[in-house]
Image 1 (cartoon, each protein chain N blue to C red):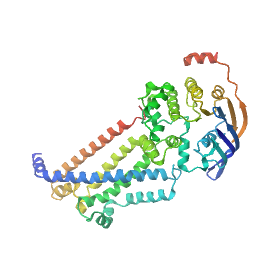
Image 2: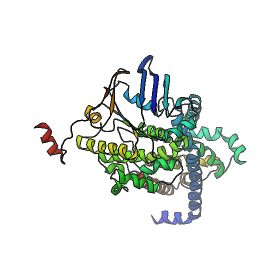
Image 3: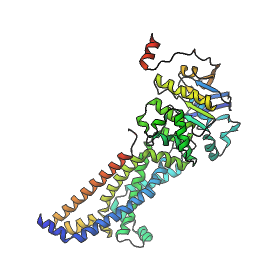
Image 4: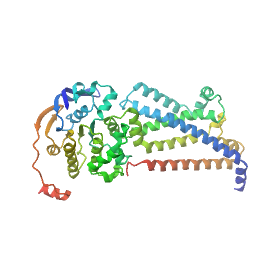
Length: 225
Length: 243
């Protein structure tokens, strides 16, 4: 135990750096989830066959995007995206470059989750918005998001946790992060206690994220009280 | 105020065409309270939803204040809809918003603040004390009164009521119908009331239209029922009615 503590102290700098890197990748992913995923999910909901603003071609196009991004194995997706990443951020290596594929996946995941959450909003809410002469934007912001807000927070929590997991393999393109630290300093140098300590750290982080998400979602939900 | 000219409405159900309304002619005058009755599936809700253009007619014309909503661009249709209040069977309140915000919502959509006006309408339906509660904590009758306040907050000239008391027990039905009669007295609102409950229509409408399979089967003036002593509790009324 004291040995592990000594090692943790020794690698303190690297651990902190790796946590910052993971935070950076997560932050970028969540930004993409909210700024791209949520609008895409909302359009999927609105444009669906039988939806309030049915546009079949738009629905199909977005559906293809979400399905493709979600179905390609992630490691292959990272590699396949390299030319695009290089074009977008000027390099295919490092934490910023690693954020690009993560952002794509986060946006696709959250698009699907938010679409499903919106589908749970009662049909009467849409009917009400129409009867009050709400514009499409008002329908979304004043009615749908207001009624679905607790579900939207919960599914964003799920996306966050998935992204923690996805981000652990970003070492392959020099993205760093906690997962990369565990592999390089723990696994590859046979210091398994360091690896397990990192895993425990991640479990605790995930539990904290889930707890915060559940708490926030519950406080926003007034449907039953 | 409202005029139906040879209005038909058909829906596609799978491959079959279902006729909801068949060549309806109907005129509703200003400040009238008209009941539309019929069994479920008779087309009465469709008829109501044609008035504020939640449904478009398949053929024929619906005129509201001399204007055919179907011929207007979407933006203007939305603006016209705001002059027509609507009350629903399931109240359709936003569950995550407190009562006052629910009532102010139609004004907020128009970029107006609306707090004072919303409070005024809550006073009118005697729900002002509940302004900070969320809908989940209200009874059915209370929810419907809030929904009526919301429908009236923009001072519409027409109020459409789609089975407003069908989800309520008899005591709450009376409560809601009292409010609707008061709306008409004080605001001279034209009210179209869709209901399958004949008593509800008899107690408050001037005129009733009976729909059957999408056609007007009968058209009659309503004679108000003899005034009944209405006593307070459910138990008393039940005993009175059953005796």
